[in-house]
Length: 124
Image (spheres, rainbow, N blue to C red):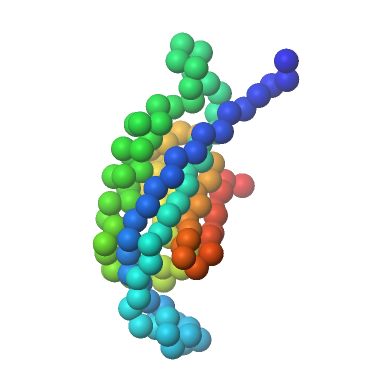
């Protein structure tokens, strides 16, 4: 049998506001505005022989909730490390917060479903 690697994913959601202060930002987006954000965390690895899974998805969910909690119902510009909270930067921030807590973390995606937009950051 070929050498297989498993991937598991867990989705999350949060509500938050932000604005863009850079000079060439669209005037509309310079104002504080909010979004419903959704995201997905991907973990890769080998299944634990005695359990058959990479990691316990319930435990992964608890870790993600803990990391995302400071973003929920907040002004993202006030979160340390997110002074320019573009989708790419939000995904990077979440990845960096999760990296030490979730061995095998390979990708974080953050979406604004109502806008049809998404950004991913992954280990290269």
